[in-house]
Amino acid sequence: MRSRFLIYGSYGYTGELIAGLAAERGHEPILSGRNRQRLEAQASRLGLEHRVAALCDPGALEKALDGIFAVIHCAGPFAHTSKAMADACLKSGTHYLDITGEISVFEALAARDEEARKAGILFLPGVGFDVVPSDCLAAHLAGRLPTATRLVLGFQGVGGRLSHGTATTMAENLHRGGLVRKDGKLTPVPAGWKKRRIDFGRGPVEAMTIPWGDVSTAYHSTGIGDIEVYMAAPRLLRTVALASRFLGPLLGTSPVQAFLKAAIRRQPAGPSLEERKKGVSLLWGEAQDESGARVQARLEGPEGYTFTARSALIITEKLLETETPPTGFQTPSKAFGPDLVLEIEGVNRFDL
Image (tube, rainbow, N blue to C red; front, side, top):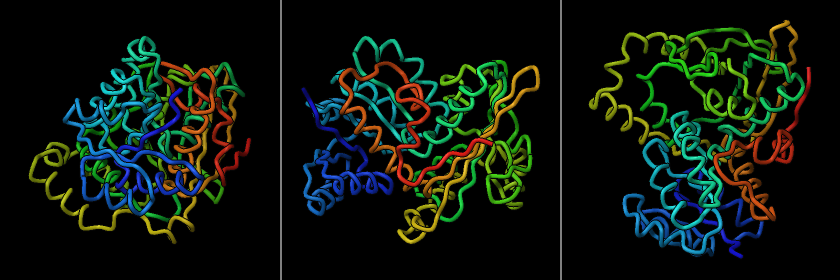
């Protein structure tokens, strides 16, 4: 039986966190990516094996996955990279995990459910902060109110900053507006479509709707047809969202995209260790049915990137330990239950 796992994009900001934590816990993952120099330096530092492979080279990618039980795909933006990795996993019989939060990726992999089942492998995107805590919270609320027809989720990050990968993904989607789920269908809405005050546990703050991954995954996890996701947003961010409604076409042009991405590259790769230690993730959710009955809950956990490293590794460990791993497209809560999130160090859930 194969028992090894591979981290692709291991030298990126989040991949580095996952690889480092895996090594601390006594695992020996194989590191992989396209940059030989960065890969060799990381492998030498951690004392781990490495395999060089570019996503644009199917043969090399399949060779890198040879004998690998599961891959944690960390090289985004995943709208550009997930298909190549999923294709290679289907051919090599490797379970696919990634840390995306991109709705298009969730939906694309969900559409390939039958392919994955026939290959006997798992497609489990979103094993990080996007979307483990919110997906598990959604499933928990649906379990408390099985008649729910409407689901509202929200999150607030306290401290920290964005990694280059996350910021680049956001830049590429600035001109696309928002998305919600209505009557079971993904429905485009303007950026910052709705606003509301949400108490995440530290007093009410202003929040706005965003196209977060749960607009896709929470539907697959709960079957609830109307879903909105909110993010705590200061006035400046709400103003930018409003402006993007009118500047959308301009924001998507090549010159503006090049300018934004160059600016991102000039910033630190992600939050510092001290920022991650001080940072906190706060989540809130509410499910409601047609009669007006409603349930609410909050969840508190570590800073988002720390959360991602811990959740990705815990899910990988559970997959390795499972005698009969789930197959096909899954969400975190469907694969391992709504209480999966409570196994992550530093996470607490509170029913309201």
